[in-house]
Image (cartoon, rainbow, N blue to C red; front, side, top):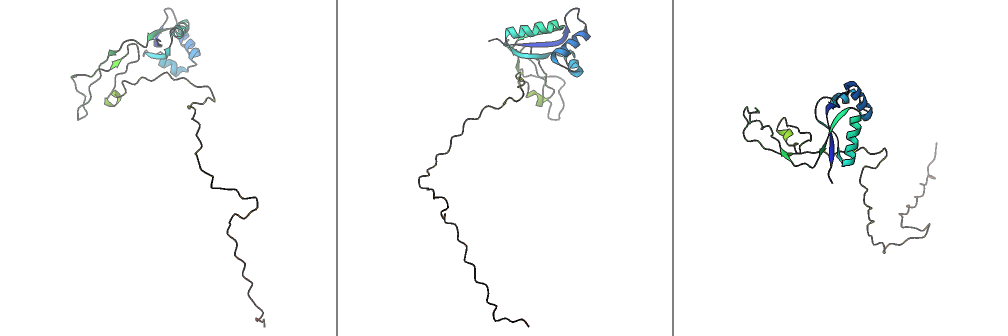
Length: 186
C-alpha cells in the first residue's frame, strides 16, 4: 500500500490573501499566532503523513479551499543521497575545504536536515512516525498477560478446628506475691 504525506511550504493558492489564509488555517488547526508564524515561515513542513491516497486527497482539497497550496508526496519514492558536513578536526576546527563526504540515503520530498555537528549527524537516519493523540481515559499500555499462580504442594498442611490450641506459647504462671507478714510499721 502506498502512503503519502502532506507538505506545506507557506505558499498560497493564486489570488488568496495571506491574512485570510492564516485565519482559515488557524481555525482548521486550532493554532495560535506562534504556530501560524511557524507554518508561514517558508520552511518545508510535513503536516500529516502515513495517509492513503483518498485521505491525502481529502487533506489537499480541504487545505486548498482554505487557501494553502500543499504538496502530496509519495513516501515510498526511491532514496537519493545528501552530503553531510565533514566533522571537526582534533582541535575542534571545521575544515575550510571538504574532503570525501559520507552520503546517507534520504527520501525526496521529506524534511531534510543538515547536521550542525558530529553529534547531530548521528540523528540523520531518524524518521519519527506520525503519532496520534489518544482519547481521554484511553489505556496507552499494552495489556499485561495474566500471571499464572505458582504451583505449590500443600498436601502436608491441615486445618485445625476453630478455637483449638495452635501451639502458641503459654504464659508462665504468675509468681505468688511476697510474704510481708513479718514486717511491722512503727
